[in-house]
Amino acid sequence: MSERNHLVAVTLDEASLGRGSADQEHERAVAIYDLIERNHFALPDFDGGPYAVHLALVERRLAFEVKSADGAPIVTHHLSLTPLKRIIKDYEMVCDSYYAAIRTATPSQIEAIDMGRRGLHDEAAVLLVERLANKVEIDNETARRLFTLIYALHWKG
Image 1 (tube, rainbow, N blue to C red):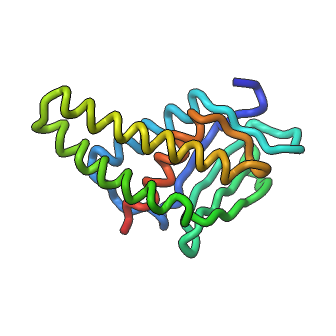
Image 2 (cartoon, rainbow, N blue to C red; image 1 turned 90 degrees about the vertical axis):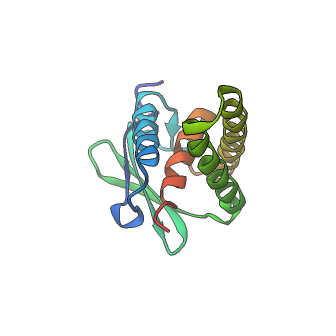
């Protein structure tokens, strides 16, 4: 992780969030922690960084607000979530199955469900990298964690 091309803070818009289950709240906290610990994030043609990101849902679009580490606004990108809609729906079903399975299923059943969950996560990460191309440079691991947080914004309703 370079000294400049990374995130030092990630916040989610409280008005966009609802209270999730304990599992969802834990997953959100872990995603933010992991994202801050290791990420690649850069703005093309901008010699700034490190960065802070604030994510919100605004009129069914993702508001991706990039700030300097001290909180000064740099740029806000608004992305349609339509390309992610199917993945979010499928991911929600798989997550519901996963959370139910970890309480009652065998380890091999849990592993099979988790493989499906990871596959959808990977698919979403690739799509997110593509959707942010020419706006923000991120690697796949950063995109995976960002998808977890974008998904968290859908827990509200």
